[in-house]
Image (tube, rainbow, N blue to C red; front, side, top):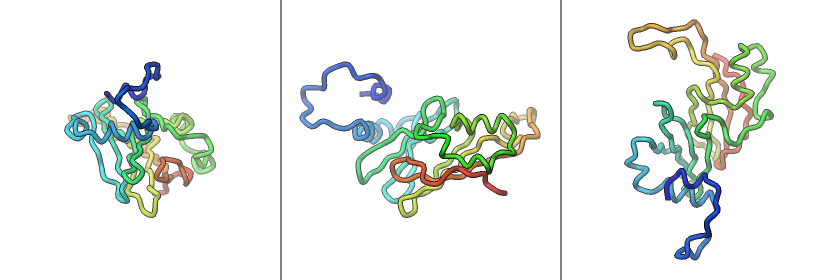
Length: 177
């Protein structure tokens, strides 16, 4: 089974050879831990400590944190979708007061759960991992290899935290620099 097949609507009957029914998070884990993903050029796996891992996918040439793997429970969850939006996200997950003065386009990206700019999941400690979510890059982000295209943008980063299931347990707040 290919990864993209896991996200298609199930209409076919389960395979006859399978006697044990796996949950969707177990099926996703089984798929993402196959050797073909370890040797893939589109996916890479990063150890996050505490038997947790992050599967990144190359989207538009950038590595994006797509799936969280829990090696203890043998489960995987989708963290970001292919459109670079947080999966387990609601407006309650952001401290809106902390970002009230950011530019409108950055505020809009936060409202949408848009993780199109660098988003980093840090190592787990005591079952919690910090997540750094850039809602606006600095001007160097737009610069080409010849030095053209740089803007005067300032980096705006929100910091929050997730648990082993990808649930946001500390609201995203503006990172003070």
